[in-house]
Amino acid sequence: MAAMDTISALLFRPPPSLLVNVMTVVSSVVVAVIGLSEARGTAHLQYSKFWNANNSATKSSNPEKFKISSRSGMLLLYAPAALAGAVSFWIFPNDDLRILLLKSALTLHFVKRNFEVLFIHKYSGKMALDSALIISLSYFSSTALMIYAQELSRTLPEPSIDLKFIGISLFLIGIIGNFYHHYILSQTRKKGETGYKIPKGGLFCVVICPHYLFEITVYFGFALISQTIYSLCFAIATAMYLGGRSYATRKWYLSKFEDFPQHIKALVPFVF
Figure (tube, rainbow, N blue to C red):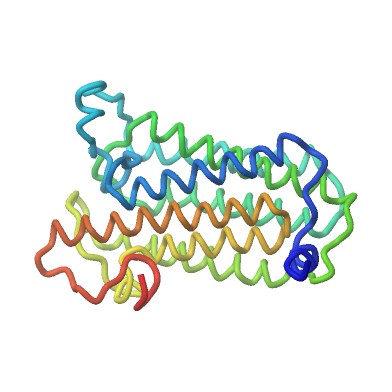
């Protein structure tokens, strides 16, 4: 009973929508399972350092996956979610502060990601089209469902503990930290270079994926702004996916660079 009281103080109760409630479970489980596969090395979504990764089953059943340029693939990842956020201002044109903050934060995040794709990132490989479509669908559906769940929750009693301004603070920390470390990554290569180097600067001195750490911070910012069960579950699943991807990335660096510093963790400084 005490646990339920705590949950009701922090979160809206589930909205009257079968779609939202089913997708809360389905999308979160799928994203978390993909993260476990990344950590175990049994399967990788094929982009960035793992753009050409394949397991034996894939090689035998589908040796030539269709691949697109990394820039095009990254735009495919983020553009639909940015569009979903922008269109939501027209679909749900109400003055509720919480949903306005959520729509603004989601749209800003994905507009920023598209800006980085076009003007910050440097590319050396390609991206498997099926991986790009999976990630794009996840970003698009989660953005749309976060906003839809928030709209449905407007008629429900507000949680007694208001966390939306803490959520905005987390979101701002996350989006600034994410952008800063993406910029550092872009500076590891000189013009014309395509190979990978060990990144230096910022939190790269203690973890190999600080950009993922700050992206997780962004998603928990969304969850606290929203205070819906869907947003919280998806933030947890995102942390599991990016945690698995970070673990795999650290293993990749260890395999490629003999001088990779052993004290550098995957995602959480001094811990993991």
